[in-house]
Image 1 (cartoon, rainbow over the protein chains, first blue to last red):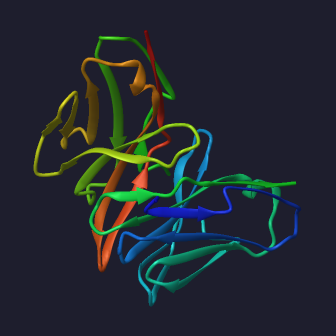
Image 2 (image 1 turned 45 degrees about the vertical axis):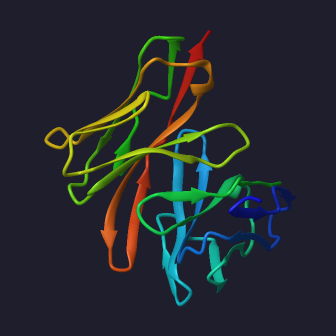
Length: 110
Length: 114
């Protein structure tokens, strides 16, 4: 079984809809992250959490919110989706410097 | 302002030859550097790393070189194999209270031709 799982793997939604992306991990790591990948821009950090009670904004947090429900779960929400949020979204976990990524969620906002 | 730059979007190399992927960074606070490899439809996976106190780290066919004065690192793959064809992300990390913050480059797509 995968150590870091993301659901859904693919999602198409309409502008203005609220959507939640979920991430679960079995690695026992305290630190979790959400990134988005866009062509030519690499991976950009949206939010990160160093433990259950800690939530921090990353480079591009506008239009997003997160919830750390437990050590193993970290959810990303788009409050009102817009087309430029179409991207590949990755969740990651870490104990030290090295991060472990989920398989990604491909989100399309029409 | 991109703190970590990979200026080559793509690189094509013949099987058996050396692949050299480059990365530049701007922030002297970074104290650890990593390379990740990404195949289509998968998440990035860790490949190799180097601490800022070292100038070279080797793991099999993969070697990372760090030039702190130039704020430059490179990944060498020797010999290159078709299975190495993937996107390679350079990343730089700085220690924060409670954890680490990592900035990724835009990635370089490597094509290894058989």
